[in-house]
Length: 240
Image (cartoon, rainbow, N blue to C red; front, top):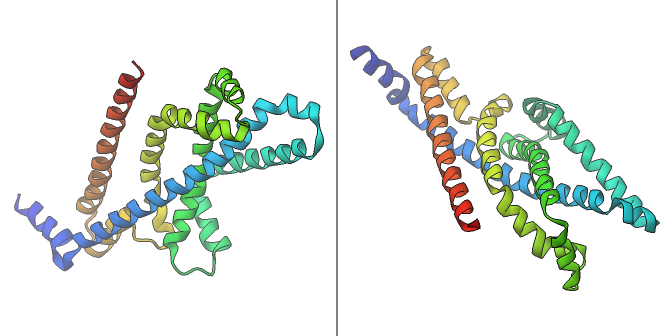
């Protein structure tokens, strides 16, 4: 017991190293929150483009014109983006953003936010696209009967329903994103995982700091999972 106390003091109390974990946690939460907002914005746009092309491909092809070709090109670009992002590791994407695309930037935090946001956008896009494609065609016809065009129907009728449908899955994406940010230390950001590793390097004691990092991640994931469970139950009750 006395040995554990000494280890605790060495790793967290001496030099106020517990503040490193706190600062790292705040950085992790900032990256996760901003990346999720970026991911949702990108995901909604890509999902709207791809689902619009899939649902209206036949009618647009019959009409021809510039609109069909523009939407076809946009659909191919979106597919390429999703394929590339989902087919490469997030840590490689982060390194490319930091050392190649934004090589002149000294602050890695905004680069990490963007990199994780771009990564999340591909997965969110597929979540939303699945939600849009699952909406009954009658909902689109109802929008047209009310005098709404396709964009207005999507904005006022379809997207609100899709959000309700995919919200639990979107929350699970938030949990996954929170854990994925643990590789942010590769670009010099002191996130939660990096803070634990820095303490380990300073004290030459791996057990306490790394277990502390794991427990902090676990606590946040358990809390978020519990909140997602409550949200799912509430949505099911509302449907009844």
